[in-house]
Length: 266
Image (cartoon, rainbow, N blue to C red; front, side):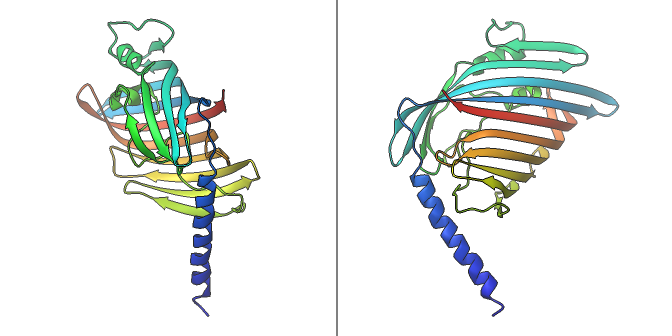
Protein backbone atom coordinates (compact mmCIF):
# COMPACT_ATOMS: atom_id res chain seq x y z
CA UNK A 1 0.00 0.00 0.00
CA UNK A 2 2.90 2.36 0.60
CA UNK A 3 3.77 2.24 -3.09
CA UNK A 4 0.33 3.56 -4.17
CA UNK A 5 1.33 7.28 -4.20
CA UNK A 6 4.31 6.43 -6.41
CA UNK A 7 2.10 4.46 -8.81
CA UNK A 8 -0.40 7.34 -8.95
CA UNK A 9 2.46 9.74 -9.63
CA UNK A 10 3.55 7.79 -12.71
CA UNK A 11 -0.03 7.37 -13.91
CA UNK A 12 -0.51 11.16 -13.64
CA UNK A 13 2.74 11.75 -15.53
CA UNK A 14 1.57 9.43 -18.31
CA UNK A 15 -1.79 11.22 -18.56
CA UNK A 16 -0.08 14.61 -18.72
CA UNK A 17 2.33 13.38 -21.37
CA UNK A 18 -0.55 12.12 -23.49
CA UNK A 19 -2.51 15.34 -22.98
CA UNK A 20 0.51 17.45 -23.86
CA UNK A 21 0.92 15.57 -27.12
CA UNK A 22 -2.68 16.45 -28.02
CA UNK A 23 -2.08 20.09 -27.09
CA UNK A 24 0.95 20.46 -29.33
CA UNK A 25 -0.82 18.69 -32.20
CA UNK A 26 -3.51 21.36 -31.99
CA UNK A 27 -1.08 24.27 -32.36
CA UNK A 28 -2.49 26.41 -35.15
CA UNK A 29 -0.55 28.84 -37.30
CA UNK A 30 -1.35 30.11 -40.77
CA UNK A 31 1.04 31.11 -43.52
CA UNK A 32 1.38 34.89 -43.42
CA UNK A 33 0.71 35.23 -39.67
CA UNK A 34 3.01 37.78 -38.06
CA UNK A 35 3.88 38.21 -34.40
CA UNK A 36 5.78 41.14 -32.94
CA UNK A 37 7.85 40.52 -29.83
CA UNK A 38 9.28 43.40 -27.81
CA UNK A 39 11.84 42.85 -25.05
CA UNK A 40 12.76 45.62 -22.61
CA UNK A 41 15.83 44.93 -20.47
CA UNK A 42 17.12 47.02 -17.58
CA UNK A 43 20.49 45.99 -16.25
CA UNK A 44 22.97 47.20 -13.65
CA UNK A 45 26.39 45.60 -13.42
CA UNK A 46 29.39 46.15 -11.14
CA UNK A 47 32.74 44.94 -12.50
CA UNK A 48 35.68 44.76 -10.09
CA UNK A 49 39.38 44.04 -10.49
CA UNK A 50 41.40 44.67 -7.37
CA UNK A 51 40.59 48.19 -6.20
CA UNK A 52 39.20 49.13 -9.61
CA UNK A 53 35.40 49.29 -9.94
CA UNK A 54 33.39 49.81 -13.11
CA UNK A 55 29.64 50.46 -12.93
CA UNK A 56 27.64 49.78 -16.09
CA UNK A 57 23.93 50.51 -16.38
CA UNK A 58 21.88 49.89 -19.49
CA UNK A 59 18.35 49.98 -20.86
CA UNK A 60 17.59 48.21 -24.14
CA UNK A 61 14.47 47.85 -26.28
CA UNK A 62 14.48 45.18 -28.99
CA UNK A 63 11.52 44.57 -31.32
CA UNK A 64 11.39 41.51 -33.58
CA UNK A 65 8.88 40.18 -36.10
CA UNK A 66 8.21 36.45 -36.44
CA UNK A 67 6.50 35.79 -39.79
CA UNK A 68 5.03 32.39 -40.61
CA UNK A 69 6.29 31.36 -44.05
CA UNK A 70 5.01 27.78 -43.95
CA UNK A 71 2.67 25.83 -41.66
CA UNK A 72 1.55 22.20 -41.56
CA UNK A 73 0.62 19.51 -39.06
CA UNK A 74 4.31 18.66 -38.75
CA UNK A 75 5.49 22.15 -37.80
CA UNK A 76 5.98 25.78 -38.71
CA UNK A 77 8.65 27.88 -40.41
CA UNK A 78 9.35 31.47 -39.32
CA UNK A 79 11.41 34.32 -40.68
CA UNK A 80 12.68 36.35 -37.71
CA UNK A 81 13.80 39.93 -38.29
CA UNK A 82 15.01 42.58 -35.85
CA UNK A 83 12.97 45.68 -36.62
CA UNK A 84 14.14 48.03 -33.89
CA UNK A 85 16.96 48.27 -31.39
CA UNK A 86 17.40 51.11 -28.91
CA UNK A 87 20.18 50.86 -26.34
CA UNK A 88 21.39 53.29 -23.68
CA UNK A 89 24.56 52.49 -21.78
CA UNK A 90 25.96 54.46 -18.86
CA UNK A 91 29.54 53.62 -17.90
CA UNK A 92 32.10 55.74 -16.05
CA UNK A 93 29.66 58.70 -16.07
CA UNK A 94 29.43 58.62 -19.85
CA UNK A 95 26.33 57.82 -21.90
CA UNK A 96 26.24 55.90 -25.15
CA UNK A 97 22.91 55.97 -26.98
CA UNK A 98 22.25 53.78 -30.00
CA UNK A 99 19.06 53.98 -32.07
CA UNK A 100 18.61 51.69 -35.06
CA UNK A 101 16.66 54.43 -36.87
CA UNK A 102 19.80 56.54 -37.07
CA UNK A 103 23.18 55.86 -38.74
CA UNK A 104 25.72 54.15 -36.48
CA UNK A 105 28.85 56.04 -35.50
CA UNK A 106 31.58 54.33 -37.58
CA UNK A 107 34.11 55.14 -34.84
CA UNK A 108 32.09 53.27 -32.18
CA UNK A 109 32.77 49.54 -32.01
CA UNK A 110 29.60 49.10 -29.93
CA UNK A 111 27.33 50.96 -32.35
CA UNK A 112 28.78 49.19 -35.38
CA UNK A 113 28.31 45.85 -33.65
CA UNK A 114 24.69 46.62 -32.73
CA UNK A 115 23.97 47.84 -36.27
CA UNK A 116 24.85 44.40 -37.63
CA UNK A 117 22.01 42.89 -35.60
CA UNK A 118 19.32 45.17 -37.05
CA UNK A 119 17.56 43.98 -40.20
CA UNK A 120 19.39 40.66 -40.05
CA UNK A 121 17.05 37.73 -40.60
CA UNK A 122 16.94 34.15 -39.36
CA UNK A 123 14.88 31.44 -41.02
CA UNK A 124 13.75 28.87 -38.45
CA UNK A 125 11.70 25.68 -38.70
CA UNK A 126 10.15 24.14 -35.59
CA UNK A 127 8.22 20.92 -35.03
CA UNK A 128 4.82 20.77 -33.33
CA UNK A 129 6.55 20.89 -29.94
CA UNK A 130 8.24 24.21 -30.72
CA UNK A 131 11.69 22.59 -31.04
CA UNK A 132 14.00 23.98 -33.72
CA UNK A 133 14.62 21.41 -36.45
CA UNK A 134 16.35 23.59 -39.04
CA UNK A 135 17.67 27.13 -39.22
CA UNK A 136 19.56 29.64 -41.28
CA UNK A 137 21.47 31.83 -38.87
CA UNK A 138 21.61 35.62 -39.06
CA UNK A 139 24.77 37.61 -38.41
CA UNK A 140 26.15 36.32 -35.12
CA UNK A 141 26.52 38.97 -32.44
CA UNK A 142 29.44 38.89 -30.04
CA UNK A 143 28.29 37.60 -26.62
CA UNK A 144 30.54 40.07 -24.80
CA UNK A 145 29.01 42.94 -26.76
CA UNK A 146 25.46 41.80 -25.94
CA UNK A 147 26.33 41.36 -22.28
CA UNK A 148 27.94 44.81 -22.04
CA UNK A 149 24.96 46.38 -23.85
CA UNK A 150 22.49 44.57 -21.59
CA UNK A 151 20.69 42.88 -24.49
CA UNK A 152 19.06 39.48 -24.04
CA UNK A 153 20.47 37.15 -26.74
CA UNK A 154 18.19 34.80 -28.64
CA UNK A 155 19.96 31.47 -28.77
CA UNK A 156 18.96 29.62 -31.93
CA UNK A 157 20.21 26.05 -32.21
CA UNK A 158 18.72 22.74 -33.37
CA UNK A 159 16.88 20.96 -30.57
CA UNK A 160 16.26 24.10 -28.51
CA UNK A 161 12.86 25.77 -28.19
CA UNK A 162 12.11 28.92 -30.14
CA UNK A 163 12.44 31.60 -27.48
CA UNK A 164 9.02 33.20 -27.82
CA UNK A 165 7.34 29.81 -27.25
CA UNK A 166 7.26 27.70 -24.07
CA UNK A 167 9.37 24.57 -23.82
CA UNK A 168 6.82 22.65 -21.76
CA UNK A 169 3.29 21.37 -22.48
CA UNK A 170 0.27 23.58 -21.76
CA UNK A 171 -3.09 21.92 -21.28
CA UNK A 172 -6.33 22.97 -19.60
CA UNK A 173 -6.28 19.72 -17.62
CA UNK A 174 -3.51 21.28 -15.52
CA UNK A 175 -4.70 22.78 -12.25
CA UNK A 176 -3.71 25.86 -10.29
CA UNK A 177 -0.89 25.00 -7.90
CA UNK A 178 0.50 22.13 -9.98
CA UNK A 179 4.30 22.30 -10.05
CA UNK A 180 7.15 20.46 -11.75
CA UNK A 181 10.90 20.66 -12.29
CA UNK A 182 12.98 20.82 -15.48
CA UNK A 183 16.71 20.12 -15.35
CA UNK A 184 19.48 20.54 -17.93
CA UNK A 185 23.25 20.22 -17.65
CA UNK A 186 23.54 23.88 -16.60
CA UNK A 187 20.16 24.92 -15.20
CA UNK A 188 17.33 23.83 -12.94
CA UNK A 189 13.87 25.41 -13.17
CA UNK A 190 10.89 24.94 -10.87
CA UNK A 191 7.51 25.81 -12.46
CA UNK A 192 4.14 26.39 -10.77
CA UNK A 193 0.76 26.95 -12.44
CA UNK A 194 -0.54 30.22 -10.97
CA UNK A 195 -3.77 30.49 -13.01
CA UNK A 196 -5.36 28.75 -15.99
CA UNK A 197 -8.44 29.05 -18.19
CA UNK A 198 -9.48 28.02 -21.69
CA UNK A 199 -7.42 30.71 -23.44
CA UNK A 200 -4.34 31.36 -21.30
CA UNK A 201 -2.13 29.96 -18.57
CA UNK A 202 -0.01 31.89 -16.06
CA UNK A 203 3.08 30.07 -14.79
CA UNK A 204 5.63 31.31 -12.25
CA UNK A 205 9.15 29.94 -12.21
CA UNK A 206 12.48 29.97 -10.39
CA UNK A 207 15.67 29.11 -12.25
CA UNK A 208 19.22 28.45 -11.10
CA UNK A 209 21.91 28.63 -13.79
CA UNK A 210 25.26 27.23 -12.69
CA UNK A 211 28.56 26.26 -14.26
CA UNK A 212 29.20 29.17 -16.62
CA UNK A 213 31.16 32.38 -16.27
CA UNK A 214 28.10 33.87 -14.55
CA UNK A 215 25.88 31.94 -12.12
CA UNK A 216 22.32 33.27 -12.02
CA UNK A 217 19.18 33.10 -9.90
CA UNK A 218 16.04 34.05 -11.82
CA UNK A 219 12.45 34.59 -10.69
CA UNK A 220 9.73 35.19 -13.25
CA UNK A 221 6.19 34.73 -14.55
CA UNK A 222 4.83 34.03 -18.01
CA UNK A 223 1.41 34.40 -19.65
CA UNK A 224 0.93 31.73 -22.33
CA UNK A 225 -1.52 31.41 -25.21
CA UNK A 226 -2.85 27.87 -24.78
CA UNK A 227 -3.59 27.43 -28.49
CA UNK A 228 -0.21 28.39 -29.91
CA UNK A 229 2.18 27.98 -26.98
CA UNK A 230 3.37 31.55 -27.59
CA UNK A 231 4.50 33.61 -24.60
CA UNK A 232 2.23 36.66 -24.59
CA UNK A 233 3.92 38.30 -21.61
CA UNK A 234 6.96 37.49 -19.53
CA UNK A 235 8.53 39.29 -16.60
CA UNK A 236 11.70 38.22 -14.84
CA UNK A 237 14.28 39.46 -12.36
CA UNK A 238 17.72 37.95 -12.00
CA UNK A 239 20.93 38.29 -10.01
CA UNK A 240 24.11 36.98 -11.63
CA UNK A 241 27.58 36.67 -10.11
CA UNK A 242 30.84 35.47 -11.61
CA UNK A 243 33.28 37.04 -14.05
CA UNK A 244 33.24 38.87 -17.39
CA UNK A 245 35.99 39.80 -19.81
CA UNK A 246 36.27 43.41 -21.02
CA UNK A 247 38.95 44.28 -23.59
CA UNK A 248 40.83 41.13 -22.68
CA UNK A 249 40.78 41.86 -18.93
CA UNK A 250 38.87 39.58 -16.54
CA UNK A 251 36.65 41.27 -13.93
CA UNK A 252 34.51 39.77 -11.19
CA UNK A 253 30.93 40.77 -11.90
CA UNK A 254 27.59 41.21 -10.17
CA UNK A 255 24.66 41.90 -12.48
CA UNK A 256 21.01 42.64 -11.65
CA UNK A 257 18.58 42.43 -14.56
CA UNK A 258 14.85 43.00 -15.07
CA UNK A 259 13.23 41.85 -18.32
CA UNK A 260 9.75 42.64 -19.63
CA UNK A 261 8.58 40.84 -22.76
CA UNK A 262 5.35 41.35 -24.74
CA UNK A 263 4.23 39.50 -27.86
CA UNK A 264 1.26 40.48 -30.04
CA UNK A 265 -0.16 39.17 -33.28
CA UNK A 266 0.00 41.83 -36.00
